[in-house]
Image (tube, rainbow, N blue to C red; front, side, top):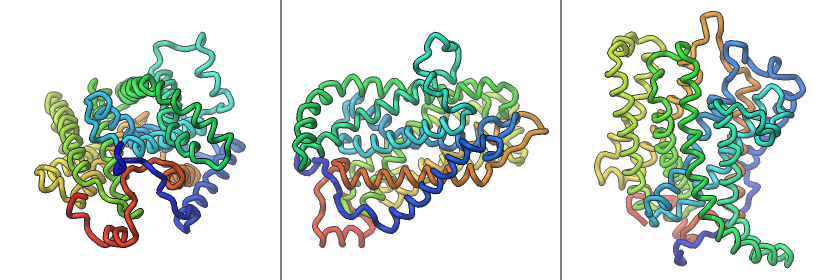
Length: 409
């Protein structure tokens, strides 16, 4: 990296009013999580025998891990397709991945009936059901969470090299070279794991058979889940970069994001082509699309949200407009999240005698987990070398905050 690209801590005061508000929501969530463990799932959730999975799985795990796939998606570009120009986006994307997958793992622990036994899953391998898709998902999420933090560890060790504590400084200088030598192996592992479990999240719902509405019930579900997580990963990187530029006064990497949005649009186009062709090939679904019941309306909303970014990013001029980039990425994340949410909750129909709507406790815990993730991200980028690019001077920062980012940095 040159001086322009060198990652460095953002700095500044951490305990700002927004940070304290996010921390308060996270603290409330922690209290409710403790209550859930004391009271049990029946008293704290609206789950039942028909809907054993609810908001914590559909949003925190299935949707949350897709939103956290920025590290996976950018790593594919940098390390597999050898697009080194995106290297400065790797660390911020990895922070999102590490935090997002950590929240997903915590949500699984909150959701299972006997969380005190969850540690046995990776260790008691002689009891594994080797035909279980759910086992693969659980193992991959656990391992990828660990791998993401290891991939991010050079940022912590680089900060340790400048520590005033001689022991921390000595430890960091000894360990950092070894970690860097081992990173290629962890990067390769980190590319394999999301490919496996993101597709398996789609395979998992195929097991529900006729209980999954026909508009979503397709053998292509694993491929659609994998493609959607890639597109959502790029969208999350664009939003993250835009917001950090806007609120931290950092130079916007407009040309890089413009090129990244083109990759995002191509993947999204492939996803939509497969999704629409699948609906047309199965002719019986055409009538279902025009019934204008809950299922058909949700399908149309999904398709509209995911078609929007393709239109917004159709030309190079539009891709250089930061407003268009941000809007396209937001529509993509909303459409991708809705698709996954629909598959796991709306399209899944266990029977007319069952219904589910998340309890207040479920909603508040999810809100607090997301707030805690945002607060952790803010603290990490301020304390450790995550974001790249030269920190602007005060006049430059004021100029950045006051303009609409219509030109590339």
